[in-house]
Amino acid sequence: MRTVTLTHGPSVPALGQGTWYMGEDPARRADEIASLRAGLDLGLSLIDTATMYGDGAAEELVGEALQGRRDEAFIVTKVLPWEADAAGLPASVHGSLRRLRTDRADLVLLHWRGDVPLAETVEALERLVAAGDIGAWGVSNLDVEDLEDIPGQPATNQVLYNLTRRGPEFDLLPYQRAAGIPTMAYSPIEQARLLRSPALRTVAEQLGEAPAAVALAWVLRHPDVIAIPKAGTPAHVANNARAADLTLPQDTLEALDAAFPAPARKVPLEML
Ligand code: NAP
Image (cartoon, rainbow, N blue to C red; front, side, top):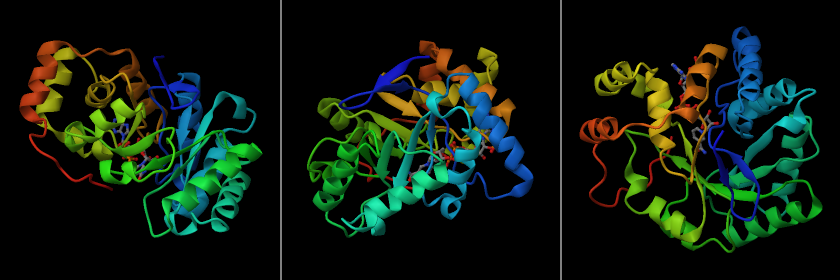
């Protein structure tokens, strides 16, 4: 599995696993746990979750899925902007650690920018790094002008990026590349809506690959971008894992460019 080296540190697999909406439907729980574990078997060891997802339910599911396998995973979780102040942030992260059944999260992100000054949030995160409660800190949903306000260098910026959301290519990805901040692409298959695209389906058929694998390989064509698709069945995880070994040929890239044009001007960062 290709890896991406985060700012200041560890290398993580370029393809990870998302967890939004996991842990919310008891009927899907066994499949969701099996999916995360199947992903671990395939090397998709970066698991992205958040306090917000199901109000802690996704973190609890991740904790259950990782029983006996904590050391195989790189856990990313997120703190809500209104809990990201000096007193609230450690309490929030310690709550996450309890739900995740671990004493250390590998990476904690500010979920999006709120009213708490960024300097206060970063200071609180750095205290948790120094205490060993978290391995590193990063941010999410920050556009260029917000990144310019950050005191210090985040391990990553997690943003909406896929074939139908190419805005970050205009300025955010180049800015992050120049600053040495890798990008983590969320909703990389546009919450499955992208898979209905006739253009994507046509090129996938020509390559003999699943549309999801092609969409993910397209995101992963950048050496400094990580993709975190969420898959709730082991079959979907297996489809997605194919992307890690898939290099799209030039004519495929051109067909995708024609169907999903690159931005010609600044597009404010979108958010889901
Ligand atoms: P996504 O990964 O683009 O799409 C997930 C959807 O695609 C699910 O409905 C899933 O269905 C389906 N799917 C996955 N693999 C498939 C395959 N091979 N074939 C067919 N369908 C497939 O969307 P997302 O969950 O919004 O984004 C991914 C992760 O990014 C999230 O789970 C979360 O961890 C993170 N995220 C972060 C933010 C942020 O603000 N930082 C925002 C959004 C998301 P099944 O469940 O049936 O497999």
